[in-house]
Image 1 (cartoon, rainbow, N blue to C red):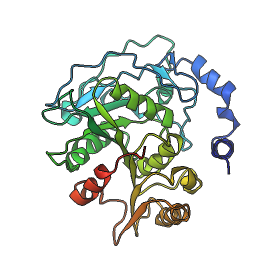
Image 2: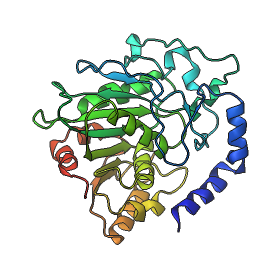
Image 3: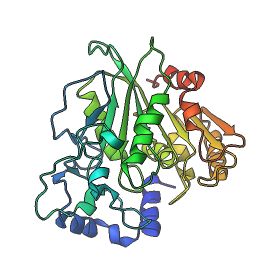
Length: 323
């Protein structure tokens, strides 16, 4: 099936006609907290806010795309969400501190702003440079897509503090780590593209070594984003990809040219192990270079062990994009 037609059908079935262009225009007229229109199609929308000074001593927080409104954003199919409106949960803080060290941002929103529409805006993200970063050198880039979390910044803290700290890095082969924060149901390829281009405009990235990984909703997001950005990634690593709100198996052909390392717990009752296995079989049928590792007697967990595994991470980082 044509991929564009597939997404039109999915939008109609799962999201309903209410999210068609007229209704997106209505959302924008309702005044979301971002007002710079994203470029058309998949053209890059450039940074709207100057970056902070580069810092290798702590996790950096980048809000340079949060002023951009994306017409192709899709509201959650599981009901409205507004967890980010609680001051201690606001993901647009200028600082990467979570929990007790969290710093509440000061917004200058217009009076008309409906903050419940913030899911339409560009991603805020964190960035970590390797020690002794040298802008004269080019570095691999790993983009991490988080899964769902409880409606508090403690969930963000787990992903961007605890889990991030488990990512294996060989000191002789360092990389740059970036992790956006999403508010909508599924990850947006257009928003991720703008994040990547934003990073490339400010630090020196090896364009042949850009990698995408994620877990749960971020695992399915890895499939979705890679399918719409088929020429961006050297390899992808989806972990425990979630099966809802629609199947990702029809995306197999569009990503079959990208090396893939995927895993899933065989007793995972949150995300479907069976659908992940079906995806592996579909990828194999298209001749993909794909590794599928079953985590036996593992449920919806175990990602720290995978990201801290030198063999897995070295496999990912060893692959360069085909020319």
